[in-house]
Length: 267
Image 1 (spheres, helix red, strand yellow):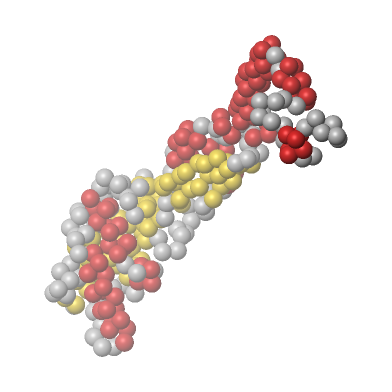
Image 2 (cartoon, rainbow, N blue to C red; image 1 turned 180 degrees about the horizontal axis):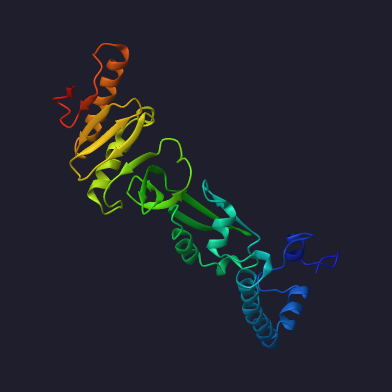
């Protein structure tokens, strides 16, 4: 013992030095004494009880709570259809929790609309549903039993018209209009192959079979198109011939036969 009352070992540690290994401070010893097995079991029970409660709360939030429920149904891509018509057919009720919205069933209901070519229904978190549709584009109009119906490029009859058909839609006369009719498909192939500017000059199209498509232009010129084969080549040749006829480079012709695009006949 030195004169100051401290040992040499105490002086070597100096003031504020950490306690020797294995020695406990008073606070640490008190905490460990308080942390009994019973305390640890109690904390474990609390944690075990909280986990299901938290999971249950989360499940309620996404499955049954109005916090994540449908407040709006947005429709993209509607043209001839109104957004209201699409929403009504989709059948998605406001207030339905988003996770409970059956998007596949909603898509199936909207797809049954004749004007719809494709549809996708998606959840828009946190509180909306988005219905994206692609409407059929009319190419021709056909008449059956006094009813005039629009037809798209695939031959699907999808909407009736009572007045003037939309611009660019050509009256098509075929015996049995429909997607499964070869004459219908051949006539549509001819119309689709034409540039929009030329199609606008087509007053009517007709076909009794898939081999004898005929186009009638607004000036009375008859275009013998033939089958659906080589439709792009026939369209290119017809466009070139019409340009030459308009410029006076060729004598006027009442009939243009492009059924064999490599051997065109004008008469």
